[in-house]
Image 1: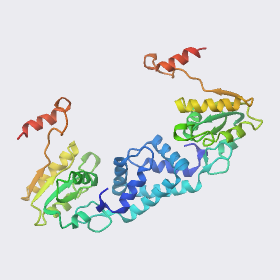
Image 2: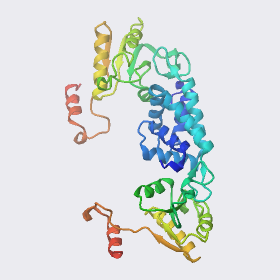
Image 3: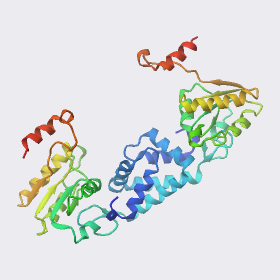
Length: 198
Length: 198
């Protein structure tokens, strides 16, 4: 920022840059847009940020974001308490919910194992998951972490920890995505789909 | 957003979506990131937004963002008041400044003509530019709007308005960018570079 633009604008650009995926150019574009064309949006965002920081906490049972001590999903008597689906983020949970094919409960890790970034088992709440999974009601833990390198490692560590304590642990099926053409599917996926054919 | 996530989180995602270039997925990712990993950044952004909305205004002379009635550039006695460079945005002004090759003053349109979006000559401050340009001191107006369709139309309209009143109006040179290979330069640029060879 030019010095003549003053501190307030420079500070705004700096603050916007801390959003994930936002670089200097995007932050400048956002700041200019808000100040020139949409000041109400700027004020609305400021209010929403404050409210969210103040009100949003983690569900005591599943760790997802909620404004209550326990989230609505965990409190829903219609959900099957015998199944516990482990996902990395609330966004993943929302994706599973959208399928409409799962009626059990969730545990949201709020992250994934990433030793290189210093994110260990404690940071993603593995002890809390173990405590949650052994509530004497859960019969199956479905591990639905992402199918990335880090997600797979996370799934492996969770599965080992729970299986060694005698719980049934399953993993979402790997295979060829619906609607895709084999020609364009990566080889690892096809190999998996072969070995897990049924 | 799931209903169980509560209103504060949903409102935050909604507010983030109003930033330019941010869709639902990005907004969710930003909201989760801020709440999970960087709450200080959320509060900092809220403060910065409020401060910017409150303090940042337009320079009375050049229309760029500033916290004073007249910006530092317009007040700088070292700048050559005989030249006035017209740019679309403060970002464009900053780009020109970084070249270090221009020592005159600026007029920032804070937009461009875009009849399809209902942005006319009045919205980009053409009357104010005309008033500014005819201060009896400015001798040359250098039109540095972008070399896009809308920027060219804007440049044309500005040039017509000022020339018809007897002012010298120039436009940044079009040509082959430094460091580029002709093979990869678009044909319109090469054609322009030919017709404007020197």
